[in-house]
Amino acid sequence: MPRVPDQILNCVVYLYPSEAEAEDGKSLGGSGFLGSVELAKGLYMLFVVTNKHVVDGGSAVVRLNTRGGGVDIIPLDGETWYDHPDGDDLTICPIGLDRDRHEIHHIHSERWIDRDFASEMDIGIGEDVFSVGRFVNREGRQKNTPALRFGNISQMPGEPIRCDGFTQNEAFLVEMRSVAGYSGSPVFVDVVKYVPYPPGIPKEKFYKYGGLRLVGGNLLLGINFCHILGTEPETAVNGNSVPQERRVQINSGMAGVIPAWRLVDILERTKLKEHIENLKAKLTAQMARKDESEPALGSLSNDETA
Image (cartoon, rainbow, N blue to C red):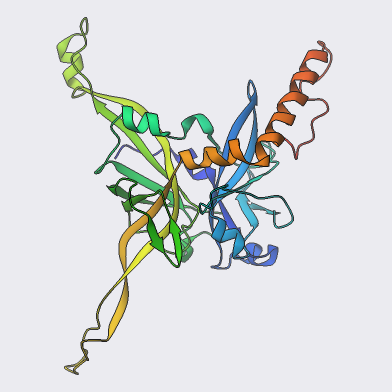
């Protein structure tokens, strides 16, 4: 696994049930991350991505880091969340942020893996992946301190994954030892493939790098939506016998990950698409009127863009 850039920690947000619990850093809620779509050159609409079950469970207050070293708390429980049209465990909420105030990194939609790219690059079992999210035992009190978990793709999307009474029809099975608190966290993959010897390149230079080519670093593979529990017989203590039927729950180490391409359905098949198109039209009209003395984003409010 290549070294992970520190900036990727800043795409993660924490979600809590209330502003008071976010302020206190209570071990409740889940994870999310900042995604984006480009409205015009260099101008993006940002949104929070998380699992629908996190928001439905009452955790819609976002906590993220500020450049001053503290946190900002933004309640989104009264805002519009756009759910997946087919019932996937995904939801998106636009958010207005200030780069001068907030320490942020967003995952642009062009860095989300789609089906064609996965097929073309032969992404499959064994690929190294990592997740960035909220480790509730050490999440950071004064500021968000996300933790990484590493693993590999165990199964490609095929049969549905059933977990906690919910069925996700299309999902990766990933071994990365996820735990509660990582629901809604982004899962990344570095796409590294062998390439044939390119003509015109000195062999000693080519083989120095082992014939590998980094096709894409830190691409969004998907969104963690569950960790799968198993059972095993209860262990006897101090020689005491235990009935065989008594079993205890264990974390199997397996997590369900919704493919990144399922996020596109929310952008394309919900009212969020209309919202994005309206913003683009507003920008186009404004930029057409702009002269040299007029600010580039004069009439757009901060809650519409970031």
